[in-house]
Structures are given as C-alpha cells and as structure tokens.
Image (cartoon, rainbow, N blue to C red):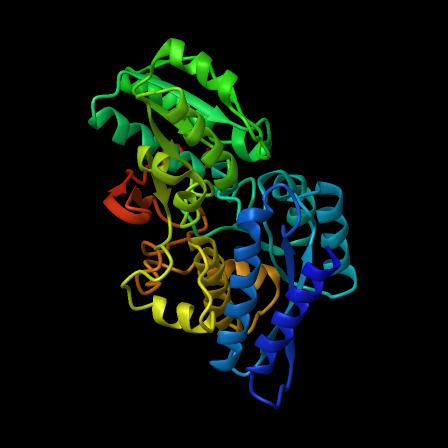
Length: 386
C-alpha cells in the first residue's frame, strides 16, 4: 500500500510541476480514491486520470491563474476512512470541492456535504444523487446507473429479450440501480428471474450461473467491476450459457478482453465516456498526458470530472464567488457543455443534476472494444433522483 501511496504522490508532484512556475494562489481540491480496496482494479486508473488532468489544466493556466492543488488519498474503499478524509479536507485543507469515488461512501457523506456546502464530484453515478432538492452539492459526469440500466433493458428488449436476470454484488454500488431496472423491466413486459449475487472479489460464479441457467434468460445485467465481470463471463462460457450480458460502466473496459478472453464477446457494456484512444478531439490531450502508457476509459472519466470542475470554477470566479455555494451555482449554468467527444454534452440545472441521458453501448471483437450504437433515454423529470 505504501508503494501505491508513494506512486500516486510522485505522479501528483510531477503533474503540479507542469504548472507555471509562479503560483500566486492555490485552490485545494480533496481527492478520495480507491487504489488498494475492492474496486481498486478500476480505481487506480481513475486516480491517475484525476492527477494527470490536474497537471494538464494547471499547465493551461489553472483557474484564471490560480493553480489547483489536488490532495489525493487512497481510502481503500472503506467508508469510515472516506469520512475521516472528508473531515480532514474540510477542517485542515479548507477545500470547497472534493473529487470522490464510491456509492457507499458518497451516500454516507451526503448529510455532511449538504451541511458544509462542499461540492462533491463522485465517480459513483448514483441516480439518487441527481435531485438537487435532496443532494444540492453532489455532481458527476457520467450517465446515471439508473439511466444506464434502463438503456440496457431497452437494448435487450429491442433484440428479442423476453426474460431477464440481474447479477450484482451485495454492495450499495451493485444494488443501487436494481429498483429502477426492475421497475422498467415491468414497464417493458419482461419476465424477471431471481437475482444472483456475485461479490466484487469473486473467483467463481458457477452456482449463481447454474441458477440462472434454470431460468434461461436471453439477457442478464452484470453490476460489478471488471474482475468479477470476467469471472462471470468465463464461467458462463464453461457452462454453455446462451445468455448475453449487459454490463455496467465499471465492469466493462479495455481490460475485460484480457481477463475474460473470447468469453468477453458475449457482453455489451454501457459506456458513458469514450474508450481509451478513441478518435475524438478531446482524446489527444488525454493520451499525451499518459506519456506512452495505456490506460482504460476510467482514466477518461476522471479527466472529464476534472474538466467540468475547472469549468465550474472559472464561472464561479468570474461571478466573484469561488466558494461551495458559488461553485454549485456556477455548475448549474453549464448547458450542453462540449467535452470534445469524451462524453455526451453535459448540462446541470438547479432542478436536475443529471449530466446527460446518453451513452454508447460497446461490444468486444478480436480482443478489442468497439461501439455497437449510441443510445439516449428521454430526459423526463419523473426520472430525476432515481
């Protein structure tokens, strides 16, 4: 763990070195990342993306001359540690904004965030965080989990699905979109089989897949991260299942074909950001920041989260109020923000913190990801907050 902390610290130091030599003022930004915990397999690239993006935007002049100082720490996916870091950032580092991580910890921090009026960008795309009446200071940049699960069900229905099963870990992240999914499956007239619980660190899913095989669904949802998704896909192939799998955005990435092999071709992933190296204008700076290393789309997610934070800060500074309430108000003026192809255009309003309702559905062929189609869900008010 110490090596990982040191590695992150070194990368952060190098990124800050890219900033202009004269730094009149720094803006502290808290960073709560999972590098060594249960979601560290996807969290590592996210943390590196946040650090690299901080360096890049500082090199571009920061927030109109004020440099960002990202105070990055690994909380190892432990909620008490996230709470401790939050309190440190508030009391010691005096931050007005935090780049955070998971569903469980983000929701645990909601009362503190609301009370302290600290803007919190999470890597959790929990649909419950999109209602400003309940979570006015929570923001994220990806299509919400609830929207993604509805889009997955629509895709399955359009491709002949009649029976569907939900597979997920017994954790806030995994369980989060399931009520929305079951509600929408009912609207679509799909028959839903028994849920199957597969942990984030599972090394075998045979018993769960045998139960799934009895129900014999045409499609199933996987709501874990990439390592557990690979276990499910490989075991499904061994058992000869014909079921196709729709995968949440943290379980489908460039590493999935490496981990699951040919079995990955039976999966379709929800992709709220462009994959690594995609031919879009915004990817040039992202790839150059990696200095020859190859990462996953999770790096891109953190890059866009930082990009939107910086845009909000610039607007808040222009309005003369670069504090929590000022940043919140500034972010809520963002409309159809162009991330240069890294995501669908992003919009926040005082009544709706859903960044967008669009994403891509990806597939795997010959060990590579490809875009099957772009999909969009209606941006209706009835879906705000879940």
